[in-house]
Image (cartoon, rainbow, N blue to C red; front, top):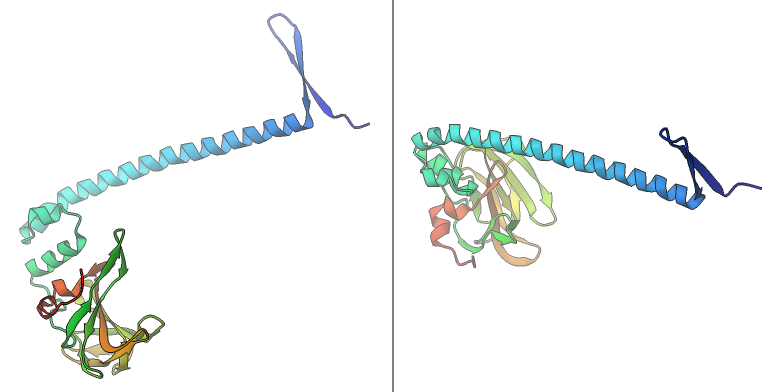
Length: 234
């Protein structure tokens, strides 16, 4: 008959007396499981402590970097309060303006802004603006650059991505037609496409987005015409 118990014996070195414990299979497996769980949580706790140390070190290095870079930015004409802020969009705009760098400053199409950038719980869920315009109106590049991508998307329909100097990119959607090719080098003011409409809105309009790296820039903060002709709800 198979033994259903495990006997564990302990002998004291002091008095030589022995003690024994009887464990069932269930108790043994439960004890092993508890030990494994303790080891796992100990490892997680250790990893967390090590990770916190790494994060603390990275934060310290970032603060040192900021302290070193801040005077250079101020000398370039950027206000100190902007340097210390967390508004990355404003920091990029101020840096470009202070150094008189080229940026998308001309409207790609004449029209009125009917929809702006939309945020929810601090996250951007609509990255560009909609500009109401006439159907098949010409769309011009607001800055010299290169056609990085041209394609079709379920949300944007026909769209174009242009790559410009100073880490800028501009994106154009809801296009009736495209008039450039991928890889094509274009001058400022070149006609790249014609205004179309989205699948959800038959009224002709252009989707327009500006990025600097991963930072989304509101076109209304760079293009005066769109700032003045804006009927969207912010």
